[in-house]
Length: 559
Figure 1 (cartoon, one colour):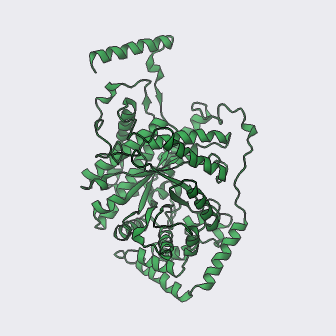
Figure 2 (cartoon, one colour; figure 1 turned 120 degrees about the horizontal axis):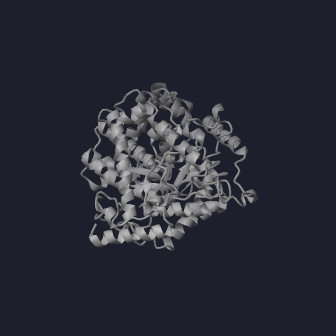
Figure 3 (tube, rainbow, N blue to C red; figure 1 turned 45 degrees about the vertical axis):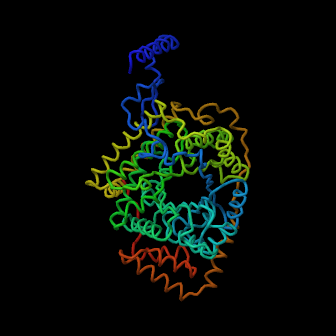
């Protein structure tokens, strides 16, 4: 810091003290949920010890964005997440949104499908079609995408436990449209490690689950070059209570684990590395979220190059989808969630996301109504076309506060990486396995969630409409989306009809081949799964065929 700059800061401190009536400017320091101390003023002096402040968008380590022009040349993909009731109803919703300006599809599946159960299983009574679309066989998948040209539409699917039959159903549905697998674009989440940490829609133990992940990566590399075989998700961690730093570190640690699993199969990092993608939460602390997303790109680029030997810049890019924070939405005064979502969406854009979903304001109460979903879509369109935020690549780059936040996020994440690396004796894969088994991830996230709730309940953290500014809470009476019980009845009937019409011998032979393939680690699972889907084997039947070999996973109690 030059002498004149130092003098200027000292003068500012004097003026601040006068305005604060004797208190020091140091008294204005506040802490983020991570415990990061945030000063009231950042200057050029805070940039002096930071790295990569002079890099440009489109250049390693990509802290300023993976593309040189970012949104100035091409806006982010508006990819609204939706799925409810039957495939017919979700298809109608998709087509309406596409007509309204949405550019990509993101499919939510119901709990039964996630857990590998068909809609007629006794364990899923009451859940069918309630929190996503019910998919039992390729017949449902064909209806879901009816009239939607899959060679022209990017499709994202949030699926992990039953990922193989769902991805295969998508591929076969495209085949029947006349669209070959190599023409398909989009993403399958396929992030099973996160399921063991926070979401629990796993089926098999970690080791065979990781084989499934690696097999999908290998299959897509060879057959679906435009399709991302994994979306490594931190979103659900933040929703479960993780801090921004924990979301950043745990997500990238899982990413490193997947890289090591693929390398262990002999895959080329410069090939599969190009198709890895990520999924982050955009929460309400605006600058913290921007810093998190910028730090993610820098960390990933450095690790892929320095630790794993990537030489292709495309394999070093951390490309990601972002969704606004569902957990931040309040049931009280739900209309004010529109403001929350707009700010979170802007943080995602200024953080450099490649695609974005904006939550609907009524989602704390129910599935979104048509009106609420339209407002969420329009929020993105306003940011893209009215604010000017898309006209400049990384407009916050060079800001002392933003650059400091980016660096601080990285530093704290690296401390977590060191712990996991030591836990795994030099392997991030083994470190993540160990962290799952000993309860590290679950414990860290639970502790963070508890601290946050205590702060809210004690009034130390203000949540508008919850613990402050509650006037009008009693007046809320919004119109809500309801999924009727008839949905479950209709879905079960369609499943019965499919089982009646199909060739039972073909199905049994195909399912036996799935089990045989599961028993041979040298065989990729995808071809046998595709064959089973083509003869109308169901999601549950295929899942159980693998379960015969893989077994199931039961979470261990941590005391």
